[in-house]
Every structure is written in C-alpha cells, then in structure tokens.
Length: 356
Image 1: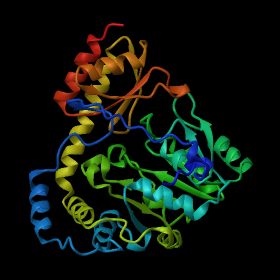
Image 2: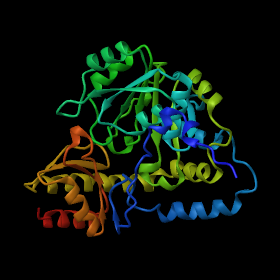
Image 3: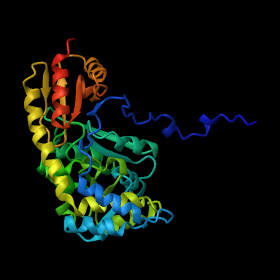
Image 4: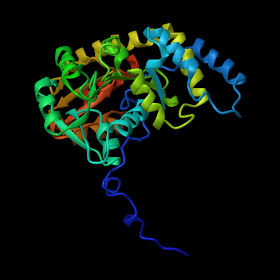
C-alpha cells in the first residue's frame, strides 16, 4: 500500500487556491446565480424533444460546432471565422490565458469583478493586477492603462456589464483601453442581453479585441454554452489549445434552436427588464437599503444591517441571494437576481420583515 505525500506534488499556485464557492443551500427561491427564472418556452421544449430523438448519442459531437456557429454568425452579422464555442464562456477565458500568457505574466482588471479571471489565472501561475473601481463603480482608462503597462500585463479583462456591480463601464473609457492597450482586451458581455450594449460591431476594427458571450443567463445555464468573437488569428490560436469535442452535441443543438427561435427568449428578457425596474424602485423605498443602478439581470444593494444576518434570514425563509461582503469594497453588500414577479415580491416582503 503506497502513502505518497501528495501536497508536495501539487503545484504551489494550485495548492494556495480556494475552490470557487457556489451557495448550494436548498431554498425554494434561488436568486443568487443570475439565471433566467423562466424555463424554456413550450415551443422550444417541443423542438428540444423532437431533436433529442434524432441525435446520435453514440457518436462524437461536431468538433467545430458548425451549425451553432452559423446561427450565431447570422444573428450577429459576422463570418464564422470570428467565432469559437466554449463550454461556458469560462472555458474561453482559460483558452485566452493559455494562448497569451506564460507562468509569471500578469493580467489586469477592475475590482471588484468576476472572480474567475483571477482564479483561472492563479491556477496557471499568472498574476492578477487589480485596479479599484471608484464610488460609481467605474474606472479611469488612464489608470488601468498605466497599471497594465507598469506590470507588463498581457490581457485586460472588462466585465460589461460588470459582475457583481451590475453597471456598464463608461463607453469612452472602455474604447480608450481598447485603442491604447498593446495587448489583448477582453470585453466579457455575459449580461449583454440585459444591457443591450456591445462592442461586437468593433471586432473588425481592433484585432486585439475579444468579446465573450454566454447563453447561461438567458435560459440554458444547465447546458454550459458560451462563445468568443475575435480576430480570425486569435480564433485560430485558441483552436490549438481547445480540447477536441469541448462542446457536446445536446448543448450545440439546443443552443442553435434557442438562437434561431429567439423571439420567445426575448419575451422573457423583456419581462426580466420590467421586473428589474420595479424591483429597483421597491428597494429604493426601503430605508435601510442602498440599491445601485443595474444594466444587468441582478441588483447590487448595500444594507445598514450586517449582510450575513440578512443572508441567513432570507435563506431561513426559503430565499437564496448572494452575500458579497467578504470583499473590502462590498462590505454589507448583497446581490439579488431579478426573478419572477412572485419571487421578487416574496424577496421584498421578507427583506422588509428583517429585524436586526
């Protein structure tokens, strides 16, 4: 029987990591993960049901996801040479770090932002340079460019809208970063469908620009479908590190149906946007809460009471939100996903019931 001291074999940059934590509390109302609260429409479910009976599940998937790429290219008005499909957009973040960074290199991004940029980077021995956001959750292009230059950063990541703050950064500042940075600028548009703002139409003007999108926020979170839009040279290099068959057949086919039959999804998005406005208005009426403007499908809010206590109270009452107060700039902050009207009403009711 062998007994190897395994910790001595593990890379130091991995050993020091903590796994990405996702709340898994069993709650009736889950408003913590920025998912679409609505299931796929009846029409889409019928298409899915018909398709799955025809799929050859004993065969490998299309390694190039050609049909899915065609549907995305048609929707965006692009050629498929600009597209790569990922197992969620997280996987494309990994690909970009593999292509453009070596161990010891740095990446830069505003802070707070999506945690996976730094987590994936650290797992590869890549250092993260964080540029603190201002009181309006925005940044100065000059500051981020200077920091990136001083640290010889290879990639700048910009979440747009930003998770967890919910806002889109200033367009002029983002454009200045793209035009001035002598490296790769990644605009992560996972929440684009709720902001209706995008830099996709600038892909052919800037060969250092990469735009990420996801279908997780608009109804297919279970299938993990993301895609990247970039200069064909960048796409070609990504394909060198992309594992064969990284996108499974079911995800490809169902995603293609969603893209082609987007009207039903758009109806759900419009409903979420209406609820976002109402939810924000109701949060503004609660004296102990400061709710921040949102371009996304979630709202960041700060409370006068300990965020941990509110989180626990809501969870006890069957409502799961995201507690962000471990971050120094997000003290006593929570994030709530915009749910259905009944879910939002229940959340608001219980939030008002909280007594410190």
